Image (cartoon, rainbow, N blue to C red):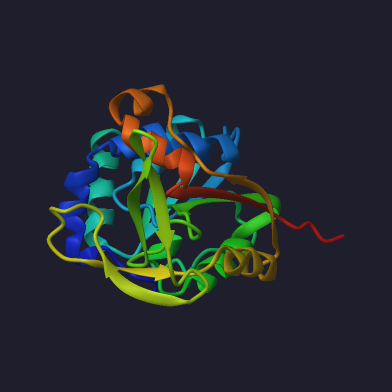
Length: 253
């Protein structure tokens, strides 16, 4: 199994709501959608779709969307929203590391919004993404920045600077492969499991899956983010918490 939010599914669905969190819309998603590009008329697979926040955005942009997630509760919430406001999205309860029910090369794009660092079999997910993409298809993932947001082994500190102070990011254990319990928010009822892999691990696994990295974005947030979260944006400019990777499926002659 690739990891599941099922134990915290009800809380998570309430936390992100119908359209996603403030951080989704003003920090992470603009970067992901920019790397993804125009998807109108394309078949898109949304891996780890949860309750369908990104799936609905993709469908409104003209894509034919299939969303998969391991959590039955989150998929049920996504289906409820689809039935209330149909966008033509198909939702499946499935492990993204084993999507054998879907044929090879059946998607033009595959997305993974904040999924890979929460999946025990991240390599399996990337292999399946590569298998399911058509030649020259695009894979785009957002995730915690593995260089700076090392779960349980990174922290913000302040140091004196002149008459004020500056933010400093302290990191230890970056090169290790490990998992640990973690929380998305203080009010989360139970921890999820986070899986840390260094940046080179992702590039290597993508290449092994037949995909080559062609984009890497480190978002700092838009104008609304700067206005509402000025200290958070200042920290993003020092050491970004999130990263968006884009890769293209190699087309063999």
